[in-house]
Amino acid sequence: MKCRKCGTGAVIELRRHNAAFCAPDFLEFFRNQVREAIRKHRMFTRDERVLVAVSGGKDSLGLWDVLIEEGYQTSGLYLDLGIYDYSVESKAKCEAFAAAREVPLIVTGVADEVGAPVPVIKEVTRRPPCSGCGLSKRYLMNRVALEHGFPVVATGHNLDDEAATLFGSVMHWQTEALPRQSPALASTHPKLVRRVKPLYRLSEREAAAYAFLRRIDYIVEECPFAKGATSIMYKEILSRMEDASPGAKHNFLFGFLDKARAAFERAEAVSLQECVRCGQVTTGTVCAFCKLSDQVKRAT
Amino acid sequence: MRVVLRNPRREVEVAGGRRVRDVLKELDVIPETVLVIRGDTLITADQVVADEDTIELRPVMSGG
Ligand code: SF4
Ligand SMILES: [Zn+2]
Ligand SMILES: [Zn+2]
Image 1 (cartoon, rainbow over the protein chains, first blue to last red):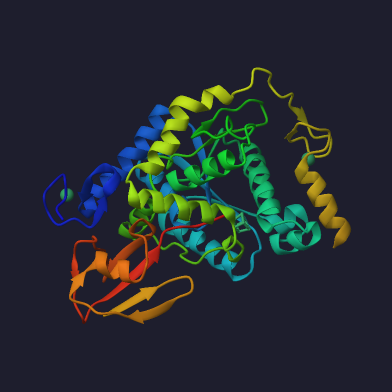
Image 2: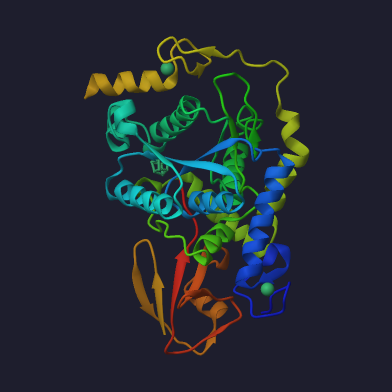
């Protein structure tokens, strides 16, 4: 197989683009997709400081790498979930990445903020680990960004992540979740920072190839709790569809974003308040994060 | 030839002298879900792998 751009031997085939690329031209293709995402959704400017949420995995470290190369002002945020060896190793990967590139990395421990690490939160709440974990991550990303004066948080969500989330929402007709699914969510309250996903145009395989070809040392092992996650099941289903019909995932997600998403936007805006305990934004009186940490502190 | 699989890490022996695509098919691996690594580079599904080759099939999917 030959590179579409220069005709030398290709290292990766992108069936949905009907193309194959050599390593340098693939890296350029990848950066172009990120540039297009940032431009199209006005994600951030070169004058803004961007907080990049990093997990130690291929997507978030690859994203951080692109943004550094592009000359954006970035800092990393690593949330230490306290999930056994997985957290120890993924944190070490993020620290090594930041040190090698001389970029700042903020580390926040979920155990310090909630009162216990994710495995204990799971026991105390008797809920799937991803529920307490996801809630804590969303809350802490926003709060840390505010505390450090970042107007925007960027995450490494890719096309497969977004397509799987959309698939899950549609399977259950969670119509309230649909309008919130977007490559860029503007700030709707002074205490909510903008949230953006600059990799949404790139597949999971493309993100992995980028990280590999850039020699980024990322964690290949999975979070031990990811095993039974329904998101993985949806990704597998979508990958089979993609295999049978290249471009299926792309068409599913982009069709939604271009044609369907607006139809689910509600006329009435939800009223946002500040949590009486921590001051972060919530729709109730006490936010879900404060309730969670109360429950954890009572039980431990 | 030797094929290295991950999560958990393990190795299997299969016949070489054919295309990557055929190796993936035998192992029931969807091409979209892995990177195929030989040495320090990636290879495409149409490449022929030799009996003495080792390739890694690195999963690209993550959950959560
Ligand atoms: S798989 Fe679940 S528990 Fe593990 S990091 Fe992701 S959200 Fe958290
Ligand atoms: Zn080329
Ligand atoms: Zn609160």
